[in-house]
Image (cartoon, rainbow, N blue to C red):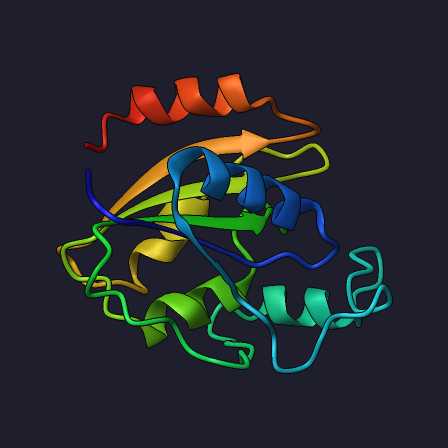
Length: 161
């Protein structure tokens, strides 16, 4: 079995819970993508066109700073990458994370949380932030509580080992 990493960004704690459960099930290391400037609830108000998240998501080239770059990825073959869905894609901080790490030859399995929208163009939008040899897999959307047996079944269906 290859060594796995679960990396995630969580603005409100929802994605953190999914990441922790997934890391436990796949016996993976856990890594939180922490923004240099934490998001406030006002920053996350998607109804406010001048909120921080609205401004960031309106500019696809924007790369929010993170406290520390990607961990040393040499020992990992599979990276589960989790995030909340914002505007039908991953928050641009996920691009920051991917662009700071060497994901060449890695399999990146996306998972996300959402209040109602699907993956949208998340996988396609992230493709340009990694080496051509990285494989991005649109994984699973986690809304609400997910059981460990359900997670185990999903991971087994991925056929990563």
